Amino acid sequence: MFNRNDLHRHKKTYQHQLANQLVTAVIVLDAGLKIQYLNPAAEALLIKSFNKLFNLPLIEVIPHSTLDPARLMQVIESGQEFSDSDVSVQLGDHFKFTAEVTASATEFSHQPHVLLELKRVDQQKQISAEAFQQQQWESARDLIRGLAHEIKNPLGGLRGAAQLLTKELNSEQQEYTAMIIEQADRLRNLVDRLLGPNQLPKMEVQNIHLVLEKVSQLVAFDNEKNIRIVRDYDPSIPDIAFDADKLQQAILNIVNNAVQVIEPGSSITLKTRVASNQTINGKRVRLTIVISIIDYGPGIPEDIQDTIFYPMVSGRSNGTGLGLAISQTLVNQHKGKLSCSSRPGRTEFTLLLPISEENTL
Ligand SMILES: Nc1ncnc2c1ncn2[C@@H]1O[C@H](COP(=O)(O)OP(=O)(O)O)[C@@H](O)[C@H]1O
Ligand SMILES: [Mg+2]
Image (cartoon, rainbow, N blue to C red; front, side, top):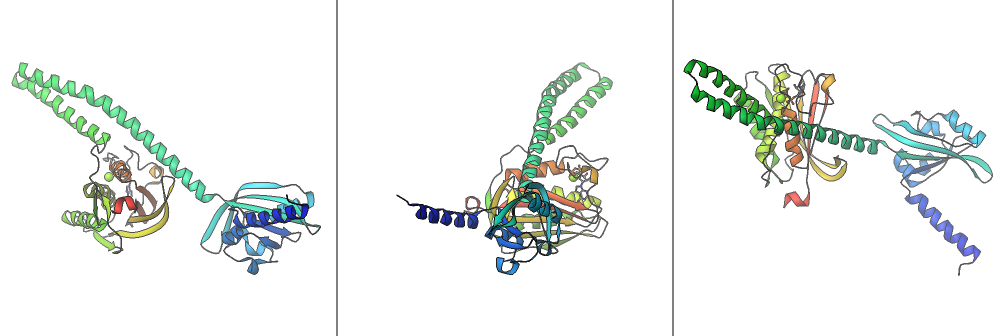
């Protein structure tokens, strides 16, 4: 059996260990809002060690945040805790994060202190926004597929009937049935494209640069605008399994959109890299190939930026809005992710492809 002292020591051991392992950053401030304690998660979040930060005023350590020191003082004075689920903190020039913060009053050595708990939420936010986008996109695609099927079936009957009718008509009247058949074929073509790629990909282990070289060739082949393709490849990228035709189509659709809007004589950059710890549809992937297609044109019109991957969304008067929807489907077939960021002067499409044991063997 434990006696009281053993139990006390036992508890202390656990408490110490727990504070060290918490994912939540814990910061203890004294009544002057000076840092008295940081757990390792807090050291990691602030990118500095406890030794460097001990006894420094919090306001000096994070001068740019939406956390109000006056409210922390209130916690000490009133003993009431407060929480804020959307505190943004700027550390240095390039690092910014959003955190959920709880501040509560506590006492150490009979002195009032504030206990701050910070949990980063921006990564989580990004993951759920992505999952939401993916869902939206899938339901839009299902809707359009359903509709396309509904059109396709009667269309077959319509065309067949017109063909039969042709035989009964004189040559002048046959012009009308020919017109019906021609227009039915046009609709069928559209519907087939709406239904999207229907063959399963033929996966082969190969090098991704082959695809990019093929795309460059195709652009050079029909190059009225004299567009220059700039290659920025990472030659160390390992071979992975993919369907070369499908990825070529996916990338060509993206490149063609850029070609359509950029100035004659300008350039498009094809860049490849390996990146670690990316998220694809809400899942963390340890290693990925990153293919970026960058142009320096006018950018995607703001009103369609959130929906460009949906079928039928186009910023061009004669566009079908199918190119990027098809690219998205093809990339999804490879368990990859296609995203885009655009502003006037720079548009970047990013294609992530997982490198896994499963697709490199
Ligand atoms: N690199 C780009 N720069 C500017 N706008 C773009 C770019 N890529 C795509 N877009 C916009 O996205 C729209 C959708 O593209 P897409 O799905 O290929 O359909 P479509 O080319 O038939 O319009 C384009 O009409 C265009 O407005
Ligand atoms: Mg297009």
